[in-house]
Length: 124
Image 1 (cartoon, helix red, strand yellow):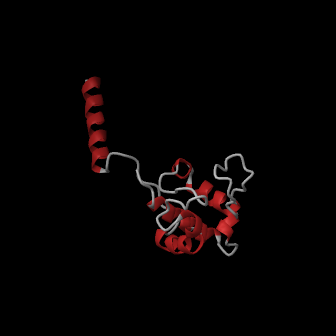
Image 2 (cartoon, rainbow, N blue to C red):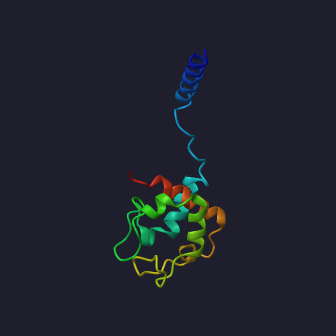
Image 3 (cartoon, rainbow, N blue to C red):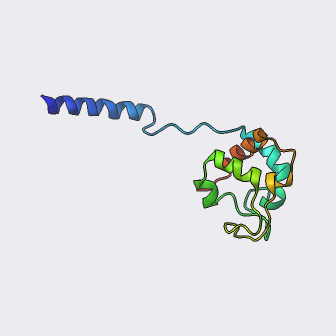
């Protein structure tokens, strides 16, 4: 009897999961990707390019970046706000990424929006 009950409950849970998509819900975007695209285009595009694939000898490819893929949204916000100087051991280009991409007028909300936009550039 216990085995049948366990099987029935397991089956019911699997059906419920399947009805909900079968996996955990996608995380809520940290910002507005549309607004982020506009800020990206006015701040980040010079080094990371129109398509996010990076400019030679300037910015990294954001579309396939393991760093971008494995870093949380909030950590990316912090990273962009702080930048990465050429002397940083993790800087693989030797090129300065200034705080806020060199745009001191960027707000935290602007950076969150940029992160939301960058997430749309990912190429699996």
